[in-house]
Amino acid sequence: MSDFYLFGLSSTRADWLSQRQAVVAENVANANTPGYRAKDVSAFSTVLETTKLDLAASSANHLVASAGREFGVDAARQTPWDVTHSGNSVSLEQEMLKAGEISRDYALDTSITKAFHRMYLSTLKG
Image 1 (cartoon, rainbow, N blue to C red):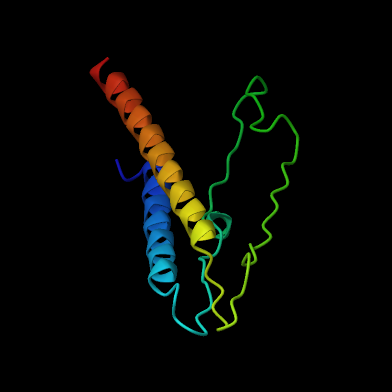
Image 2 (image 1 turned 90 degrees about the vertical axis):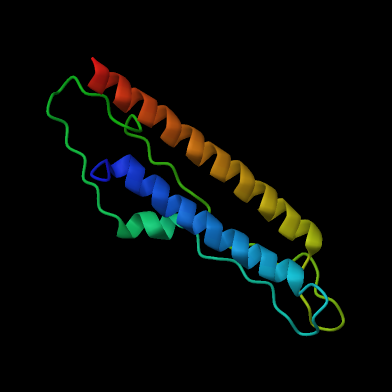
């Protein structure tokens, strides 16, 4: 099953999410460390840019993925909400929001993979 692009993509995204969660945990652990600067991992879109998947329509009746529209993504990095007098830029509220976002993304990722796996097994059963 590793030959399927979706399973590989899901695994790569899960790895990225676990790395992001580790960085968020490190930020929270150093919330009171003087001079500590908050960190974040690069966006997952950079991972997708390095992954090659060329789609080709084998029939004129196939639908275009985005119906010909370009979807722009704002990849601006977040700036810390406040920098304390000690030079620490960790905002616990911002880190908790990131942790919630990571949790939701992981749940979505696993749900999509599970649905695709069920669909794949149903086609094999016939």
